[in-house]
Image (cartoon, rainbow, N blue to C red; front, side, top):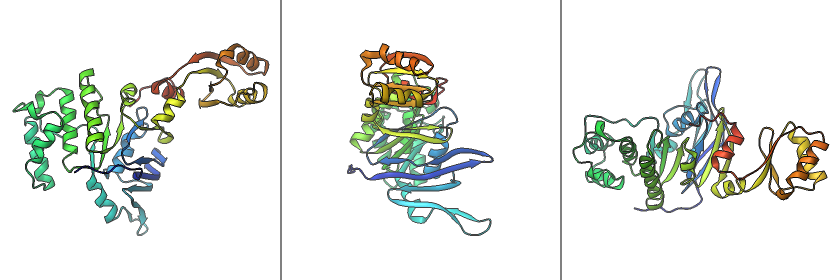
Length: 326
C-alpha cells in the first residue's frame, strides 16, 4: 500500500546527546526529518553520524535529550538515584516502522539471498511467505538464484542489506554509508534503488555518505555535523542558493571585512560559510575594487577568487579542507 506524503515530521530530536566517558560523541543535536525527505547526513570520520543513527534506531541509549518518531516522544527519565529509563511503550512501537542498515549488513555468506531473507522473515514473525520474493524483485536480486552471498559483488551485498531493512515494510529507512566502497556501477544501482524506494513506496530516508557528489543527486535536505554538533540544516533548494556564483575572499578578520562590505561598498548579499571565509554574491564584476577596499580597511586579504560551488565545495568551506568525509 502506498503511503501518503506530506510535511509532517518523521523524526525530531531535541538536544540529543551521547557521552562516552569525557567525550561527547553527539552534542545536543536537534534534527528535523520531514515525511518524504531523503535527508543527507554529512560529516567527517568520528563526527557522530553513526552514533546518532544508532540512538534513533534504538541501538544505543542517549545520555540526554529526546527523540520523537512519528509524533511519539521519548526521553530519559530518572526513576531513582542510579536508575534511568529511556523511552516509552508508544515511542518504542514506532520503531517497528523503521528499517535500518548501520555499518555492515548482517548476512550469512554461505546462504543465498532468498535463504537470508527467509531467516529474517521467520525471526520477525512475518506470515506472508511471498514477501521475500517481492522484496528481492524490488531491489533487483531476484535473478541471483542459487548464488551464495559470499560470491556477491559489493553492490549486491548492499542491496541485500537494504532488502533486509525493508522486511517490515518501513515508513522510515536509516542508512549509514550504503554506497561506501562501491564501484561506479554499484553506486548507481544503490542510488537508483533509493530513489525508487522514496518515489514508489514513499519511504522517508536518512542517509549518510562521504561521496558528496552522489548524495547531491538524491538528497532533498541536508544536515552537516562537526565534532558531534549539528552545524546546519538546509533544503536542496537552499544549497543551490548557497553554491551560486560568487567572489570568495579569505581574510584574517571576517567581522571587519563584513563591516567594509556593508558600510564602504554597500554590499549586503554575502555570507560567512566558514572561519575566515566570506562569499560575496553581488558586484562580483568589481572584484578588484572589493579587494582594494579590504586592504585599505586594514584587512589582511589572503585569497580572492571567483567561485561556483557544489555540495563538496560548500562542505569543505564549512568544515575545512582535510576532508575524510564519512
